[in-house]
Amino acid sequence: MPFTYNTPAQQAEMLQAIGAGSIDELFQSIPAEMQLGRPLNIPPALGELELTSHMQELARQNTDITQSACFLGAGSYDHFVPAVIDTLASRGEFYTSYTPYQPEVSQGNLQVMFEYQTLICQLTGMDVSNASLYDGGSATVEAMLMACSITRRHTKVIVLESVHPEYRQIIETYFKTIGTQVVTISDPSQLPEELDEATAAVLVQSPNFFGNVEDLSTLAEQVHDAGALLVCSVDPISLGILKRPGDAGVDIVVAEGQSLGTPLLYGGPYLGIMACREKFVRRLPGRIAGQTVDQHGNRCWVLTLQTREQHIRREKATSNICTNQGLFALRAAIYLSVMGPSGMRDVANLCLQKAHYAQQQLTSLDRFEAVTDQPFFKEFVVRDKHGDVSGLLEKAEDFNILAGVPLGKWYPQYEDCLLIAVTEKRTRDEIDQLVEVLGS
Image 1: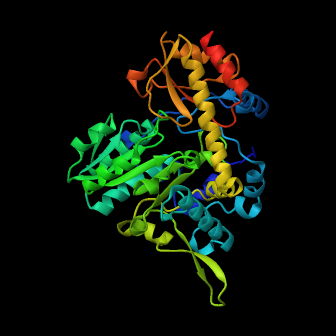
Image 2: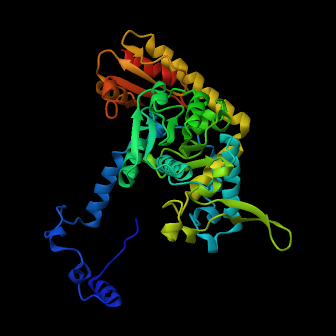
């Protein structure tokens, strides 16, 4: 980490430049009752040697995922990342540009956005995609806000309880401020009785938070009969073998794109995917890159339909999104290009087969049972009949196994349950060791 100094003389120079006589004067607009009025409760300063040692000790507490068999899921997955992705995405032309605004956006970056959008449309079966959003959670809430704008219904939205609980928290936070009611239902069978003329949109996740595949075609028919829109959050890898949401009647598709060529990265930054029907394109937030020709007839690319300046004018903005995760969209575009349809199908099939093998082996033990008989993709839930999920996880860590995600944090009814994800990276030996350790 470089040393960044800030001397008293520099502080005085900065204060003079902005017209303030002191730090206190700089913050005088903050009411006194809202100021802390005392020093921060932090340890005394350390010398450089001591500080370096302290930071190294903190870093050693991080788990090196490459040294563990990772069965964690719940939105972030340990998929294989081909070496070509790091090689291309780390080129200076891409790596330093990050998220340039319209006046200085280069043809190279615009083409990347356009290719990414094209690939996302092919993957999801939708007509148009934007050039990415912040992450899966922000994409989900933007889709629900977009649905309200399209239907001109701002009274009520419906969310299935099987949607990622953190996505649901984000939606609750956003909609609480605008007065829209968020109705959560525990089962799709409850949907017909909740749908009415005030409903703007229904949010479903498939495969859902528990890994189960939902019947999107039936849900789409019910939602459309009520004049509402169906928003679906998907696992991009699952689309290698599952029916595309666009072909099932979904109106807006969102996803967390981390599994498309981005490592776990301790939880982020990640990639928000969003695509929709063409008739909704003018309500689509974020950037959209288009293809055209220049004055010489050469193929070129531009930002189209909307500009960054639109988002500065809040009354004209489709959302508060005015940027995109360009670097991670690039990684996703490279991943999809390298894998191709057959590669995506192979990865998805490996996840499917290995997850089912793991579930069968675990539930063959007396200690575990399946929670549901619904079809699942690469994640599944098992119940520990001994009710000691935390003990199981601690025990597995002693064998360098990250065994899964406890569900009690979000679902009290699943306090004794474990969510286990199996990607194409997990070997049969690792799965067998997981079963042996958890079952012994």
